[in-house]
Length: 131
Image (cartoon, rainbow, N blue to C red; front, side, top):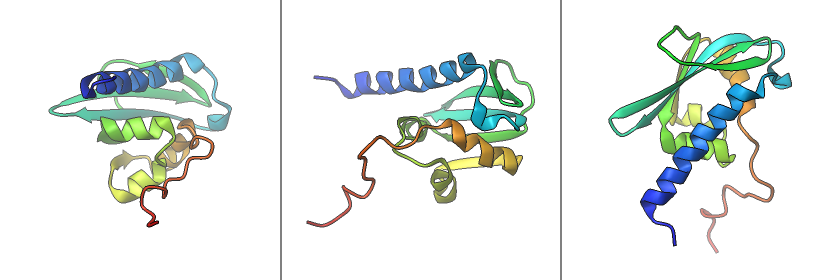
């Protein structure tokens, strides 16, 4: 049986793994015409984990340090967990205020393509419908 702390650790590993994989991916055809720097700020209690994704005509790389970003996406770590699992839509999260974006809005629109689609058969309204 998994405990809440082991579930949180697994989710953190999932988020870290997603961003690490983005950095190793190299070329992303869906962003072929896009260049820019996107900082993802994942709030986790009082701390913030920051990841800088550099896109150069579809070539992806992660950078460390505090260099400038063209677009910043901020949200709580659980929101990123849901995005990475495909159970939340990026733009819907922005419109609901679960994610805050500053900077280049065209880059923000393009970056949503890196997040996975919902799992097959997943129904986001299943838990809210009456019997």
